[in-house]
Image (cartoon, rainbow, N blue to C red; front, side, top):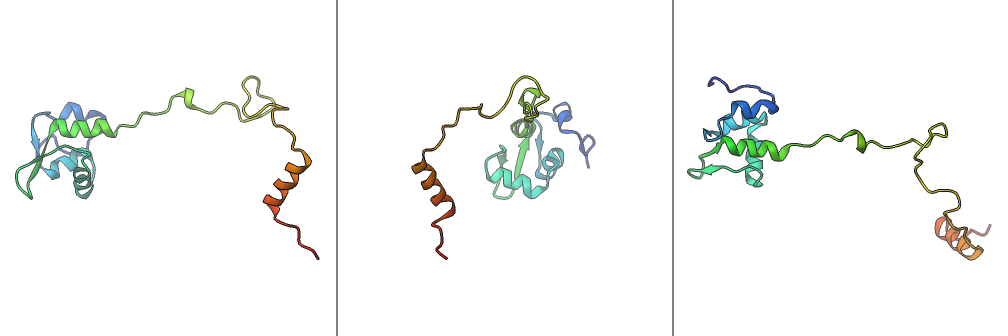
Amino acid sequence: MREGIGVIEPAHVSNIIQLDKLYNEHEAAQILMISLPLLRRARREGRIAYLKFSERRVAYRGRHIQDFLDASEVQCRGSKAKSGTSGSRSVKGDRRGTGRGTIQDLDRHDASRLALETFGKPSRS
């Protein structure tokens, strides 16, 4: 194993990866901290760029690895994305849901049709 290759934090990869250096499959998988089959699947699906020297020999540039990491990054949700109130009466401010009187009352025909759709025809006993 070469020096500098090992288990590393993804956030620090850009400090270690030499962007123009060529890495073989095993080195690339180790840098990405993924299995070799997962790396090959990502290559087949076109999620990571690579260099092809023959049918069985491929290599990855450092920038290919970095681009794959950047594309795989998921942003965390900020505090603004959190839900508001839970509907507790003690909480002041923003309330969720519909307000009182915003849902129209059904007339008897609509109510009967809705009951038939929901419960089916009444059975005669």
